[in-house]
Image (cartoon, rainbow, N blue to C red):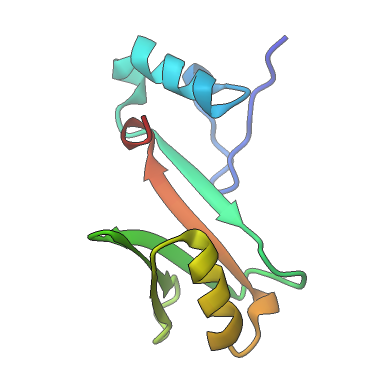
Length: 112
């Protein structure tokens, strides 16, 4: 029996995208393009132990690089080639990385 997956962001999950893994999400997206329009995958990464959430680093692309900016609009602005490099930069740039998390919202259609 398939369980409905909950998303970290708003708690809503479309039944059309109740899936056990990304391969299944890709198949459902291909089978039901009308339902997948606008669907997003929200990746939330907690690379440090602590009380994460005071700083939310939103990841986006700028050309070939990843960019992480503070969701709440502070001056935090990091650029790197990989998520691992962003984590490394944040570890040394943030005053208290234990209060930070990384969020990357990707359109499902762009994943496959």
